[in-house]
Image (tube, rainbow, N blue to C red):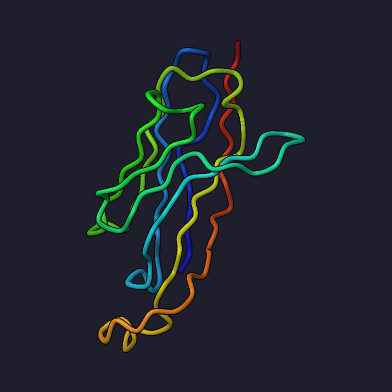
Length: 129
């Protein structure tokens, strides 16, 4: 599975951006997905996660009420809609997918593996004050 993020850029505080993550390859193996970010000099942190069916989402306290995660499994995409951006949201944003099937045969038989994490290359979001 390969993940490619897009949509980052420079925005003023209070503005909005929409990040996208496109998955390709053995996408049948993807289970939960999520967005993470890493600011300069800081550790990578969770932003939001979403289950396979999209029924459950989880957000970092710092983005609750401002960010919305969603996914379209038919299109193999995940998005992060960000509103009311703050300078402290400045970071490289990464898409992550948890792979739970080793092969299509395992997928058909629902034979699951320990989740394997796959990461995208990241997209830079810069929020100016």
